[in-house]
Length: 468
Image 1 (cartoon, one colour):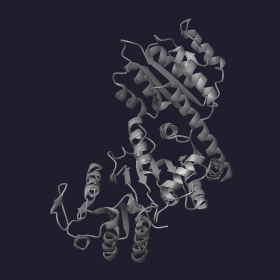
Image 2 (cartoon, one colour):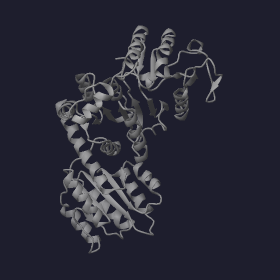
Image 3 (cartoon, helix red, strand yellow):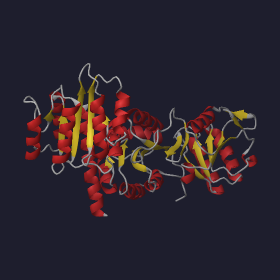
Image 4 (cartoon, helix red, strand yellow):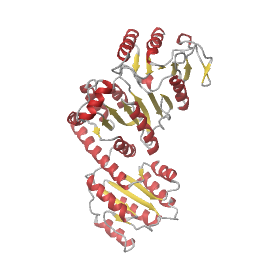
């Protein structure tokens, strides 16, 4: 397999596509590179413009002061072959092609793609795309983003960042926007396009070897080589979670995939068999995949099935308990020592059971005391503690927020937290807690669903380790 490093960490980037019928995409590439604070040189290539987006342009690739680490072609379909010829004659080896309409079943797309392939093969050019919306990689040491998306990924978190690997431009953008909104750390985005030379399994092989990537979110509709994908996915899944939504698994979805791209998608039975063999954690929706990624970004090895629910409201605890049963989680009784210790301090109306109800008027002192006791005395009985804090009206929840965050830095049991009520500083409070490794939610059922997904991954990880 060709070295894919220049697509993620190029030394410099030259952008082609300014002299044709439309330069909109090429301009977006320059903006994306600048927005990501790319540390290398950016070379707009234009024979008609002296400067573009504040950068001095170069008339041709042959006039560059150095061999560019990566070429980005952002131009209409019919202009790509000629631009690629220039890439080949100047002996550049890696090219990202951002062009729409290539490889579809109507018009000139197939014949133009064939010509692109012939040029790439003749000049030994490794192509990412075509029909791609670009690639971004934001690491600890700098950023690179050459995409058509509005915002770049925000970069790695406490345990690294997730990669988004998708055959669909629309799905890629939806996942990136939602991940940024939900606080899911994403460091890498790959819009694969038509996979002319680099297929989805090649990307998985590259991502498996990147220690800054803590997991992968995959969306695909069809696979060129199921066996190769299975092997690459299993290698990657042995090192980090690989989550997947598979499009076209229903009869109606299969027809839609074939009408759109001419490819055959896998049905549900085939997808389930593939997931089992590949160590893939298949989920049914993008929302579920994002929930799993949010939890795994904080708890990358997953959690066991037995949970303790602790909060200051009865109703949210009831909803959380119902969801725990639906997710296949266990809610063991409190060990006697924890029951005795809690009962000695809690008001008579509180509940020293699972779920623990501290009552709505619980202060930071009561909340903190109960949580510390649960962490100390419940370590052998629970795999995770799910905390719920409803901020009382007219009371500042900051002391409880700070207490939860302090626990996150030293807790020996994974914690997931839900915060409800009037949250005037929600973003600030959530970030304060999540920086310590605790995922935070504003819905108790989503929190428990995330815990169920973490437990499911723990099972998958156990099977992979047993069979390795």
